[in-house]
Each structure stands twice: as structure tokens, then as C-alpha cells.
Image (cartoon, rainbow, N blue to C red; front, top):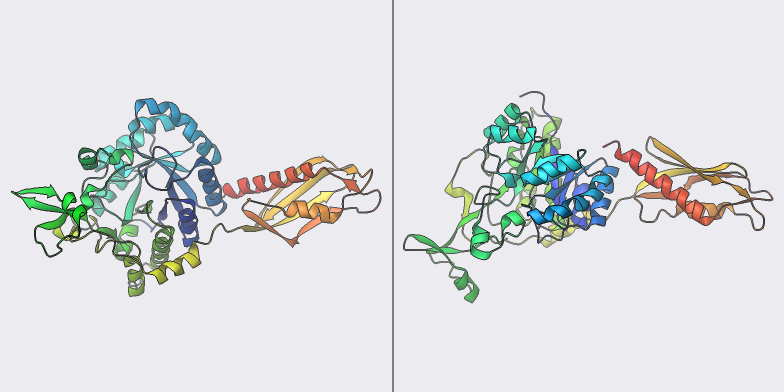
Length: 452
């Protein structure tokens, strides 16, 4: 392979709190779902306002945000797709993860600035499929999770397209996106975001066939010692932390963590561990790579099922990949959860700014906001002479300081107001001061976004 490339670490978010935890823990990008067209219909998901805020917050810290539109869309639903996506595209959404060919073509036509990422739900298993989707406008594919690392390398090199690969989380028994089991037994389609996860149920062998044992499960505790009852369709969760060097050397563009249905502490904790070892390896690729047992234990205690595997990267099929015993979550360490929450799940982090305001009679009002090495200036109405009570410097300062629900904070010592307080003094409508502050904050946010 060529010079090692730093992969994108992509974290899931089922709600805004999980999104903030992912950003704080070091995710380069976050993927989430809105209120419609997503393959996790039972996650909390984000309303329109929350998605837009997440886009702006991610860009504030140089991160990216992708949105899932990865269900099969019915014909009558296409009338709603444009209005649904338009606010997000306008806000600067970085990419959309899609399953439906019709949706892919629709977004390419109507929202050409939004990157198209092909969901694992499309079950791309080879070079030719990836090449076709690249011709259709896709810049990235998430291949089926059943591929080996060598097969993913082949797709990347021969199709010349970005490859995003799952590195951690739940695994499906069937090819990603090709399972109709939930639809057949329960009328809830996984391809419409409503999988009932029948593969996680217990079954028993009767006359050579596997029978669903849900009725027995609901009647009371199962006999764990029974050799007839087991979980033949439930795969162990994936954990690839120990083969991170192989994945980086393979040139995988994006490392994806599964878990939009999981808690913020899971998202932040898992993201932080993978962030640590990706960075550790890239600092010195020739050094021996070893994952500390304490970090392995963190991953084991963050909502993983009873056992883990490394997926299909280095094996084709194996009995060892199936749980067989109960696939339920074995619980989590309350002290660990509290520690992660205190460190990462702490709400929005404001960026400190400095400000300079110019307010002199007969001149345009001006306000400059600065953050790091970026400064923006906006101008407003001509400042008037006061006819009655002049406006005090403290009045202006209090208005400029009210940054409200913006992503910025301004301390008194970082604010300079340039004005003449001698008679007759100045006057400005409070509404105009508020608008000047809002414009400066919006402009600074836009400039910071351009650095992504």
C-alpha cells in the first residue's frame, strides 16, 4: 500500500446527546437519522431543527455530518422527499447514506452538492457493483459486512471509490439489506427501518427444522440446560480494535461504528477507544501494536453481547461467529458509564470569541467577532446622536454579550466597545443591536464551517 492515510472515524447518534458525546470523544464524522426514510425507525432520531443544529455544531469543530435516507422509498413518498431534504442541504449537510436507487438519482439531481454514500443495505459485494454506483454519482460505498478485507481492498483499488467499513457493533446473520425474515414472520420490514430482530430469538430443532421458540420464551424462564434450545441465527458483535493496523494499511477510508439504537455513553466510550488506538498506531506504525486489557474491558462492558468476534475480515464463515447461547446484552458497568458520561456527555461546548464594536455618531455601526485566526465584520445602521437619554457603553455591552443559543461565548474582558460617551451621546435601537450581533455570529459560523 501507499503512504498510510488517516481514516475517518464515523460514529452513530440516535439522539442529540449521543451526537454531542461522539463529537467530544473524537469522532471525525457522525451519522444520524431524521424523522423519516431511515433504517432505524425506533431510534429517538432527530427532528428538522435538531439535524440543522447538529450540522452547524459539527462544522464548528471541523467535523462532518451524514444523514441516513437508507430505506426503500415507496412511489407515493417521493413527493415528500424534496421538502424533507431541502433544509438539511441548505444547512450544509455533508452526505446522505442511501439504499434506494431512485433516491440516489433523485438526490444527485436535486441536491448535487450533497455527497452520495451507498448504504450497506445495498449489499455491494464486488467491484462491478461499486463501479456502477460510482457512475451514478456515489463517492463512497459501504460494502456488505460479509466481505473479507482483501475483497474491500479490491473494491477500493479497482473501482476507485471511497470505502466505508464497519469496525464495531452488531452483526446481521443475513447479507446486509437482503433479509426478509422480519417481514415474513412479523410484517415489519428491515428494509423500511422496522426490523423486529427475529434472528435474536431462541429456536429449537424439530424433525430437522429450526422452529421459533417465542411462545415458550414468553411463558416463563427457559431451561438454559436444554440442548434443544439455542440461538443459531444470532451473530456475535463485532470488535476490531486489535486489527486496526490491518484496516488502516488496507486504505479503508472510513471506520464506522454501529449503534444508532444505543445509549450516548456507548457511542462516546467506543468512539474514544477507537480514537485512541487509531492515533496511537499512526504516530508510530512500526512500533508493536497492543491494546491494553483495561481498554478491551471498557469495550466488553459497553452494551456488547456475551461474546465478540472480528467479523468477516479475516475469515469466511465459522461456528465461532454465532452466539448459540443467549445473545442478550450482559449488562454494563455503572461506574464506567458514569465516568464516560462525566467526561464526554456534557452538552454543547461553546467556542470562546473576542469582539470589537464601533459606535460613533454619523458613522455606520460595526461589529467584529473573532475566533482563533478568523475574524468577520458586519455593519448596520448609521449611529444617531441621542436626543434624550444617551445609550451607555454598558447597555451596548449587555446586548452584544447575549449570545443565547449560539455556539459562542464572550467574556467581558474579550469585548471592546469603541464609542464617544460625551454629550450628546449616541442612540441605537435595541432591535438593531440584536440584529448586528446575530449577523456577526452567523457570519463567523459560516467562516468556521468553510474550514471543514
